[in-house]
Each structure stands twice: as C-alpha cells, then as structure tokens.
Image 1 (cartoon, rainbow, N blue to C red):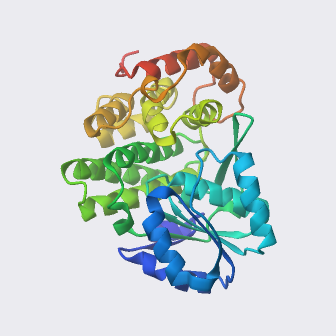
Image 2 (tube, helix red, strand yellow):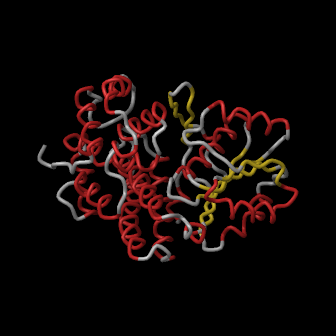
Image 3 (cartoon, one colour):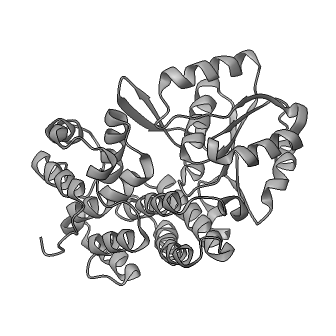
Length: 354
C-alpha cells in the first residue's frame, strides 16, 4: 500500500466493510450533489448507498451499457449539468466505472469509484467511449478517481464466470505494463505481484467461491494490476480488445481472456525477458501457455468464437489495428494480427516454439 501512495494513483481505501466509509469520503471532498451510477449486479449495494447518503444523491442511474456509447452517456451528462452535480459516485463493474469516467470528463466534475469486479479501471486515468461502432480511448487526469474504495465483501456475490473472466482481464493490464517502454522497478514489482496474487486467488475461488481471503487477494490483485496499467502504456492486447468491443460489442472481460495468450505469443520474441518473468510467476514454459492454461484451469474464456466474434471480418479488423499508432514491442503487422485473431477465435493452446 505504501508503494501505491508513491505514484500516480487515487486515494485508496481497502478494507472489509469499507462501504460504510463512503459518506465520510464524500465529506472529505466537500461534495454536496452526487450522481450515483450502478449496474444491475450492484443494485443491492447501490440501494444501501442511496439510503445512507440520503439527500446527497440528486441523480441516479441503475443501468449501464458496455463500451459507453455516446448516445447513452450524453443524456446522462446533460441531466448532470442541469442538476449541478459535483461528484460522480460509481459502484459496480468496469462498465459502471467507464460511464462514470465519461460523465466526469464531459461535465468536468470529480469521480469516486467502488468496484465490485476486477476490471481495474478504478485505478486508471484511461477512458473509453464508443461512437458509430468505433471505440476511442484516451487518458486524462480528469477521469482518475479522487478516491477508490475497495470492499472485498462486495465481491462475494460476484458469479464465478464473471469473476474468472474479470480476473484474466486484470492480469492483461499487468502483462502489458511489464513490456511498456516507461516501466519502472516499482511498476514491475506491482505488476508481477498482481499476477501472482491473482493466480492464487482464482484458484482459491475455484475451490470455494465465498472464500473471503481469496476474494481479498483478487481485489488487491485488481488494484495492483490497474495501478500498473495507469503508469504504463497499452499495447497490442488492449488495442485488439478495444477494436473488437467497439466494432462488435463483444463482452469485455471474456474477450480479454480469449485474446491475452495469443497477444502475448505475438510479442514473445520482442519482449522475451519480461514475458519470461510472467512465465516464471505462472510456473509455465512460456507466458502464453501459462496464461492459456490458467484460463482453462479456472474456466475463463479461451475462444473468441464462443462469444460471437465474426471471423469473416478478420481482415477488416486487422486493417484497423495495423494502421493504429500504439506502443508495442513488436510492430503491428497485418498478417501477424490476422493469425493472432484466427488462433484466439479457435481457442487453441499457444505453442511456445512458434
């Protein structure tokens, strides 16, 4: 936790029962008019917040949409301006946090986030929005939450499938941070620790989904992985997932899980040292195989085909990705990207000799 305080990060509250501290944190920020955003999975917790915060909650949204379409967010932002909202408070998964970021960005107001999944967005200044089936991402200090509240008890109700896919999504943040050009020893330490904790936590909830110790590990791992990504640049894995999400509205976390082993395989010969460290953490011959094996072991998604990816449009996708300007160890190569997508579509296991 001391490491987190040293670098670009929100104020972090991490404790079982921390949901009870929300009112005090709002008071510290001196906010008076709150927009409460929640998703369906966090409805019970949002109702509790609505009751405890009382008249502070001026506006509430209880439905969110993946990838934050502009036609959806613009109406909420307009109402927030009319109501003179001075704080966006989100509780739920990455889509809730993502919507909150766009409202904070468009309305120039502060954000407080309470994650109930392992998306990691609550630790970053990265925003994403979709318009005309194209997802755009960027970075802005305006969307970095002023405070992030982690309460492991809120994740006990998270279904197993969502938990493991969300976990693989978070691991992707740490992996890409490791081969970013600006990675520091501190970020490297956080990323590798995040992957280590996640691996243990995912196996722990496989044995007992309500194990609070494992749930705590997963939430702490999510914090570390999100923190790592916030202090590094994104590479090919995130570019692919953002492109697929915007073009085809594929489910976010399962998509990350299916793409990650093959994105890592794509970069293996260009980030060998970093990915060998990932392999070591996973006790695997290669990072790609270790990540695929972990996803398979815990029941996370390994195939794009199973979540609706239209394989016939692969060349179109590869054209979009190969023309992008992203920092990545291996240059974006259309043929290589098409092969990557084809392999991720089938869900086959990477061959570390290829």
